[in-house]
Image 1: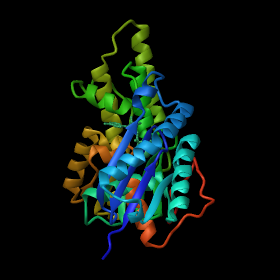
Image 2: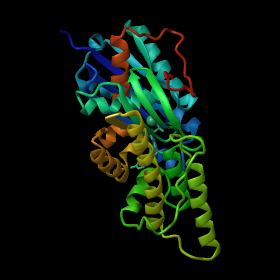
Image 3: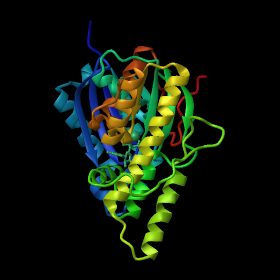
Image 4: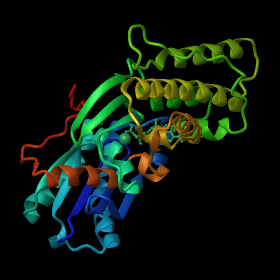
Length: 340
Ligand code: KG4
Ligand code: ZN
């Protein structure tokens, strides 16, 4: 049978990325041009600068992905592209590029939900993994507990009521002077810190067992930092990072395990940038082992934004005959489909 090759394109935030994926699982190339150095000087992603950087880099990134994969344009079966959620100007660059390529080459176009892409990242290294399964999605902009029933079909069990998990890491990291991007810096500092040094409340949401609230935890942490500063006491970055990380990990693990028990789910897939966190991977791994749950998560490079995951998701929609038409547009607040 002929191989199916998808060119995936991702530009929803601060990474310009392209990848060639074979038969939905095999990554032939995965090129990521990160803008971290550019945004670090501003302490976070500056949307207009992100769009400008994408437009500068996108052709080079796509050419590299094609060259690394050793793929000819005529062998590409479809172009998959992230069309939301994300920063509108950033998304538009990828969407316009994908439409131009599909139009000029006469290839099908498949718009991909970035969040579904994150979940599909686990399919790359777990060849037998197929929906349905429970998933914990923890990124810079989103936190969801959901059952992926099929491609494009999610039953949302819980979501954050305020900040996303990654956003809370980023804000607390900035407050203790660790800078951007906060998640990896908190993880590094936490390795030599005491997780019991500060009491961070575990955020609860009244009336919902599965929703999250990280803003209260973040505010409690920021108040503690201010109190110490007012008293001229030092904020030991390592202890603070370890205490905050432990609190976030606790909440994510307890929610995910409760959902798995309540729904009788025997597989848990973790996705998104925060899924790269070693403490979270270890704690969820241990909890899943105790509960007899198979736990899947991607290598760190496939946790944060990349185009391989977009190529995987696009493949499964493509083989189901789904196509986007020429009116495909950026949808900054695109939601995961709801299927209860
Ligand atoms: O999935 P992602 O690359 O972008 C979005 O779709 O939002 O996630 C980025 C987020 C950032 O908030 C970053 O601080 C967090 O993931 N992150 C981490 C780690 N690596 C990235 N958080 C905790 N520990 C990490 N090692
Ligand atoms: Zn992402």
